[in-house]
Amino acid sequence: MNCSGLVSPKAAVRIVLFVLAAAFATASPSLLAQCGPLDVVFVVDTTGSMGGAIENVKAELPAIIAQIESASGGDFRLGLVEFKDDVVVLNDLAAGNSESVRNNILGLSASGGSGEPEASDEALKTVIQGLAASARPAGRQTGDFGTFRPEAGKIVILITDARPAGFDDEYTVGEDDVAAANLAQEAATRGILISAVFVPTPAAEAFGVLATVELLMTNYATVTGGIYIKTESDGSGTADAISEIILNCGGLRQGFVLIVNPRSAAIGHDGAATFEVQTFRSSEFDSDIVLSIADLPEGMTATFTPPVIAAPGTGTSILRLVPGSTTFPRTHTVTIVATGNRANNTQEIHAVSVQVDVFCDPPFIFGLPENQPQNTSATRGGSVRLSVRPSGTGPFSYQWYRGPTGSTHFPIAGATLSDFTTPPLESNTPFWVRVTNPCGSYDSRTATVTVGSRGRGR
Image 1 (tube, one colour):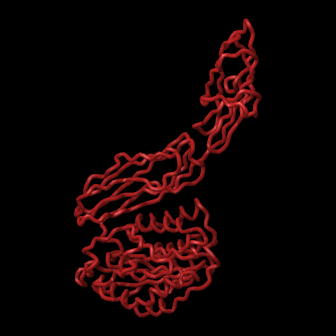
Image 2: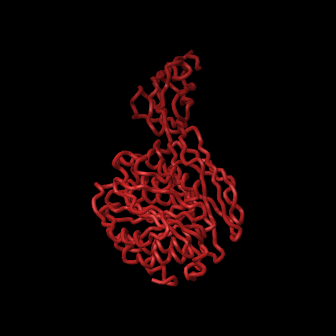
Image 3: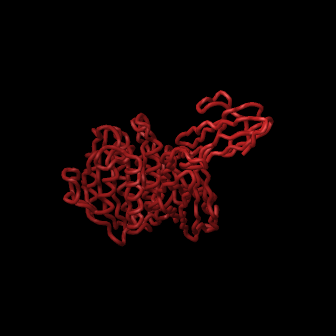
């Protein structure tokens, strides 16, 4: 494979989150050398499902290493870390170690893993923080990892099909996803670009984790300024993905960074969450950046202020998320999307996911007179007003009924507010109301309206 043929036909059907400028597709060695010094670390999932991807990389390995040499002008160091449920540092970053790295990659074999998920986050932590085995839980890491050179482009290429799970082999929402997001932020702070190659294997599909892994992998790339690429399900295209990453200096050429803070928020149904969305784009671009939301939960509204970052696309917007009465109380993943155009009119799309924990206290009606609907009286043919004042997490929905509490045979059309004025009454009539929010409902006491010729309405 030479530099003018790095992108195979299969690359055309991969989902590439960052749309690469066509001018880079035929870059010459002299242009590639402009990446400058490079420290490149391969972080590879070697569990049984990854056999196709590993073999695909092995087949193109000489070309990949030659491309790194060309891109860096010969000033490069390589590292290699493999992981299953544990982490193994096969090669620390070192100059002149390409032959050792090549031999170790050729020696990789896909086996084991004890199902899904895997310790990809721990492998990244080892690389990002430069951890020795002695700094890790006993027996969980083999080999030591050092540090990146300050003057080098710092590129980590993560290849996996699984969710991250620390060392406990169990993915927990609100813990492992948050830990992965924090790693991405730490890498960005250290100037380390994580390019994520997602292999959507049949095993990942069988475990039902495709969407989750894709969101996490996308986040690694977008937060750090790296590149996200999805390969074919059989692992073909993995080598092409690596080539594309190196061709674009691990993301250094993209000239675009999207940062969102905070990365998670907890809100009630009567509250709102705000996020600061920052975009950074080099002056070579001359199009606006349009902000939008993907996968917005039912009932939730999203507002960007402003919704467009003026060309070249550097600025800040405030995102406000407000849950509605139909927003289910749980942890939701909301994806913030920034869309712009390159100079050749090709579209580029960047995305960052945040976690929104919508919590909810079920409704409750205290027994005080000001909270519960009360017995009262009315003149014959007259009406009275009944009311309820619930506690819990609003907003609430209401439905008033005729009859004793719990009997839903006679709902009153249009009686869906906290206050209810009865129709004209000719006889004693019981009423009650059911108060509902997304996490439950509560029935009021029965309020009986006594009708008499000289009754007085309240």
